[in-house]
Structures are given as structure tokens and as C-alpha cells.
Length: 222
Image: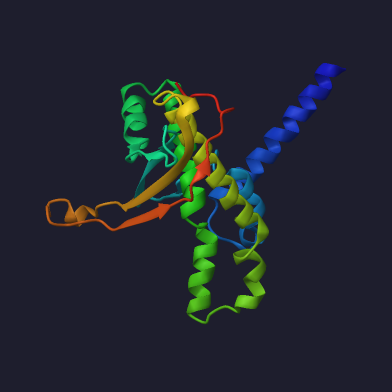
């Protein structure tokens, strides 16, 4: 009996995940627009994908995550470190061996960053249509300015901060860390037509988060 109940529960979870993932990957349609907050609330950041069914999208942006710390000293004023790159090391280790936890760590980092600094494709397209006066903003206000989107951004910021603090826990003694600050740099991919142009500089967008107190209960990544 217990085995049967477990089988039913797993079946329901699988069907739910399959339906949400299918809606996420389908082209824009009325159903997807209506349930966009629910779909993206479930998919981001862990299950985020950068492609759509039958229409793969090339990567248009890359991102780098940096962190700096306030370290306790004998003086009243804490010492502020320089920016530490959290992304390059993870990508290098992941490329050396795909079958390691680094693959998941890279996905968590990128998923959280994308959920925070880049709005959903549906919301972007709706905003463009509203700017072009093709749509009434009041009609879609609940989709563009919804509590779930704000909650998702808040959750993504929390995840990035905790991830970053877990990274530096092995670099500095936890007892000396007072606070941390994360900087996210989003870099536009170089177009193929500009590959040979050494003077071309891709656009960069920098997002600097507020300082947050260091959490001693976070487990180190390494």
C-alpha cells in the first residue's frame, strides 16, 4: 500500500514538472502569459533553460560574480578587501571535468543571477508592446508588476549572497568576516561579425548589491 502511494505521489510530481517545463519552453501564447508568474516562480533559478522548443537561442550575455568583504580588525573601522572573482574558477573546474559538483554550482550561480538581473522574456515583450502603444498597460499591470516577480528577485539576491559567502568561507576565517558585498557584471556576447575586430568592446551592465551581514551558519562550498 505504501509503495502504491509513493508511486502515485512521484507520478503527480513528474506530471506537474513535465507540464510546467513544457509551458516554459513553448513559444509565447495566451496560456503562457496568464500563468507566467507561476511558471517562472517554479523554473527559476534551478531549472532555468536558455532555449525554447524548436527555436534554440544562442547565448547573448555572460555574467561574472564578484565579492568583497569587510574584515574585523583591532581598529574600529573594518578592512575592506578587493573584489574576488567567483565565476572564473568554477567555470574552469567544470570544464576540466563535467561530472563533478562544479556543474551544479555553476548552474546555481548563473540561474540566480539571471533571475535577478534579467526580466522574463514574456514581461520584456509585453513592455515593448506597451511602449509601442499596442497594448494597454493597465490590462497587463498584474503581470508586469506582480508580487511573485518581486519575491523571485528577493529570493535570487539571497541565494547569490549565501552562495558567495559559502565560497569565501574557505578563504578567510569566518570569525574575521563582518559583512560581504556582491557585484554582478553582465557582459554582452561579441557578435560573430565583430570577432576579428580587436577594438570592439561589448556592452557591460554592472549591478552592485548592498552590504549584508555575514552568516556564520553557512556551510563552505569546498
